[in-house]
Length: 110
Image (cartoon, rainbow, N blue to C red):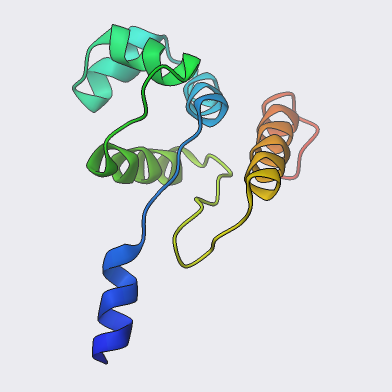
């Protein structure tokens, strides 16, 4: 692996927006407390993430991504290697939420 590839790999950051954290929790059919227990944080922390008061730390965002993958949550995280403008990021979140809702209601192609 070249030095350039190594630098790009280290810069990858996972961006979990409030609506996506809530959509993941609902997809997994968990309460805020249950998700908090799973992630080893306080229930209030989950609430603050979902309302946008705070954002998860980078390590927690990685954990959220792993949990989402394990739960079959249809989320493709934005990374520094996959940048988008704020409109694109919001649009990606809306599409994923719609897909999660469709799959939950049985109308999606899961």
